[in-house]
Length: 132
Image 1 (cartoon, rainbow, N blue to C red):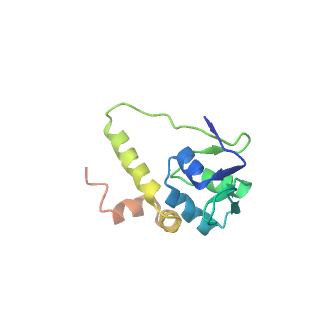
Image 2 (image 1 turned 60 degrees about the vertical axis):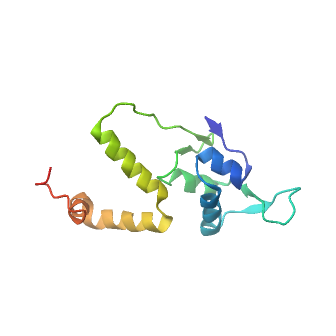
């Protein structure tokens, strides 16, 4: 398990979460996370992110990420399945898709699922119950 520090650079957090620095920088802007200039780095572009409860809550509720435990601020690695099951392939594809969705796209998908349910969602995808 990896421990989140109180303050982390964009690169440190990206490595810890298995994300890119660009994604972390986008989240900083979109979520208005608290940052401060990194000591010893000229130009003012390098920042330290304050790992506040707001940041932890965002990470814990982001499906694309590993789950953050609030009490210890640890990140758990998900169990990997090594069976060549077709369902595992589908779950991996869904997971990969969720990881690249923007927060806006995730919110729209959430609204669609709440509004139409799984049957409506499957119908929109052209996957009717009669199809195998």
